[in-house]
Amino acid sequence: MRRLLLIGALTALALPAPAFAHATLQSTTPHFGHELVNSPPLIRLHFDQRVKILPGAIEVLNTHGRNFAGPARTSGTDVIASVKKLPTGAYTVRWRAISADSHVVSGVWTFGVRVPAPSVNDAYGAGGPTVAEHLVRWVWFLSLAFAIGVLGLRLICLRGVPVQRALDRRLAVAAGIGVVVSLQAGIAAFSLRAEDALQLPFGRFLYGDLTPMAVTRFGRAFIVMTLGFALVLALIYLAWLLDRTVFLVPAFVLSLLFVSGFSLSGHDAVDPGSSWKSELADWVHISAASLWVGGLGALVALVWYGAPDLRRVAFRRFSQLATVSIALVLAAGIYLSIVRLPHLHDLWTVDYGQVLLVKIGLVLAVLAWGGFHKFVVAPALERSNSAGFLTRIGRSLAGESLLGAAVLLAAAILTDSRPPAPPVKAPPVAAARR
Amino acid sequence: MQPHAEMVHWMFATGLLVLGLCLLAEAIVGQEVWRARRWRAYLWPGLAFTMGVLMWPVMTFFTNSAIHMYAHGSWAEVLMLAGGAELGLVHGRLKSRWWRLTMPLAFAVTGTAFIVHEQNAWFFQRSAFLHHLLGWTFLLAAVIPLGLVFRPRSAALQASFALVFVVVATMLYCDRDLAPVFGHLSPLAGVPHR
Image (cartoon, rainbow over all chains, first blue to last red; front, side, top):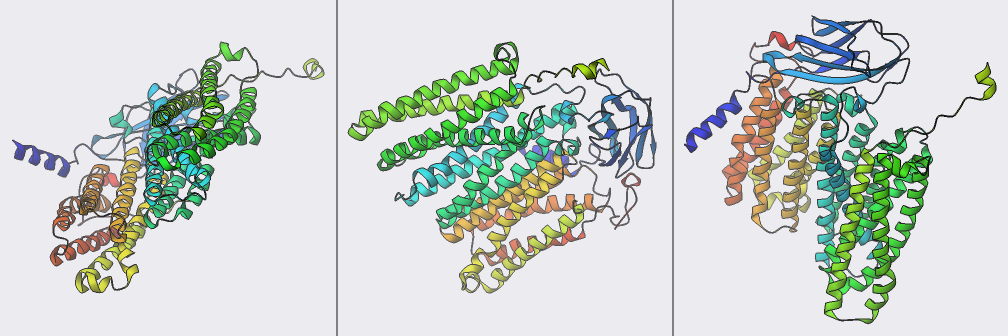
């Protein structure tokens, strides 16, 4: 039976031909994301090989789902469809073709006629973020926060303190694991976003063209962050291999730099009213929150239970770092809330505001817990040597870090939500009369 | 501005060729002579790790299908893992010989990814043929680094291990975007170029 299974598996691997054949889209007319002055007379897809067409091979859909494309035909390695005259508006092109040996390849892109093209993530038919997307983004946030927190803990809180090599290596391994998980989460987040835009089941999605997604702001952020954190991983690895903490310095700086990808692709980069100030505030918010929540997790997991002799100094110094981080988180967060929510009642009347309220509630709870640690536990820690007391503090810190993780979950859902549109300014009276 | 896919193949072919030649030299002269200069011990594992890092740009810039992205991502990760583990062993940071299992794992993952990500048949065109051949070469050759885990001083296994990289590099050099293979070219593949 085992032999039969083995032979079957090998045969399936050796003979993929009948099931697979794949054409690659090389260019389109009009191009991805272009704003056109006039309605295009036709849609042209240029492939690297001949394809066969299906009924409805090309659809040009307006925001209500009305199709303006005529029947498609092939011309060499091109697929062409005529298009009815398009009124001003945003359009989504969905295409599918049968490649060699009957495999269906698919794709989507957007363009605008006398209006800017919408992001391909907002293509007609896209359903928006799902629970899976929220969870993946949460894991992405958590893993990056942990990596940044570990690096911050080592370089800021344990600076100048004699640290055992074993702990140094554990810190490097922990930071490396955080980066590896973040790379996987980034790939998963990009795939889920692309799957939603393409509106394909997983089997067909594997052969879907992701290029239009790669040129969106989110796609570019994904590319830059993936490349940046691959480099960070290499630096952390060198620190571990050579026992040189100095490699962690560029790793930390690059981590803080590349985490800005979230800001450059988030609301603060694309929504009306956004500016370099809101992007900067968002970056400060994310970086400081990562340092705070991730550092707390690292303090508990690696120092409190891994290096008892460093507990006091690490706790005292982290408390100072957390105070600065929290001040930055709050200042940037309040500024961003004012920018994103033009009216106070938006907090309870729109979805975005409601999620923000939950997040604010969680942040207040973590702040209260952190305040208890800073103002009650820290002085007591200097005086007490009781083992039971130290164990209870460890549990309490673990609880605070779990609540911090919950804050990041709220942040992940918030990132996937859309803030309310700012109020439209009324035209000047004179201009209106004219 | 992206380089053509075949040029990226050639860049990695050069890396694999250098890696294979280092391993071959070590197999011929013996580990003691090869490692008389300390830095030589780090040469091929360091190269493998660096190629893993350099594979990430390939993953992110070649997104014409999701499965291509996943294949390149898996190569980046296993190259970094296997190269990193070998560097750790050479440097003395890692002690257990079981870390050498990362190399056969890397071969198995690489081979599977080659076969799965190539959607065309063997004789569709040259690169399709080579992708299948590369996949099967890696899958079957995974027994060589597996053997080295248990018999690390076997000269035959060391030489075979080195030659696998030389053969793989040669295959990658033969790779072209669109060209016939043994006179076969699917009419669906388009016009040969370059």
